Image (tube, rainbow, N blue to C red; front, side, top):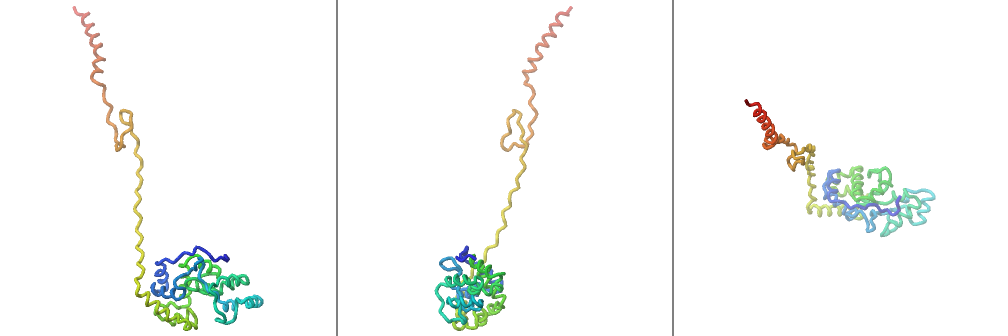
Length: 269
């Protein structure tokens, strides 16, 4: 696993929201509201890494034996949520935890736009938590797709469609959602986005212009003079060659006529 946690870090396109929302039958206003509450609409930090929150209590339950004791001694794991405040940057904790157990550490962080917990990689549509993290490093659209998959897998899509904010908040954020007013903030964000014009649908792709079919070249025909034909004359059959000029026959027949007349003069009685 690349411990820089830096990939392509592609940003979300506006058209990704209605497209991914359509998978679970909601519009972009519901998706916008969800993203606002989870990560303020940003999936990457200033360093181009996925936004994460490392959860020491989750790391605790993903470890046992000597590894758990080591993590507890290092202050990276504890039994109950909220025992200690979260640091501003979770990556130092994540990297230190990965040195103890990489898979357990990755499972113990929430990732990207939807803050999908690594433990939920299968519900998010991945075979391994490492595959999920690599997708999170690449693209915010993949981050959102993972969250949409998780919502569908846990049957929270119906609550989102019905705007049952409390029901959705409990299923997505846990039973303690009221402590951070998750449902109230969802409702407020939805009201805000409902008053903003939706993203125009993409124009349908135009069919490509027909490609002209090349014509077979015409045979090159020589003109009577032996020169090639000019432009536009291809395929025109030349006319018959001109006959001899009139002076030619006079030059040929004159001596013959003179000889015949001479013979007639000699035989005249």
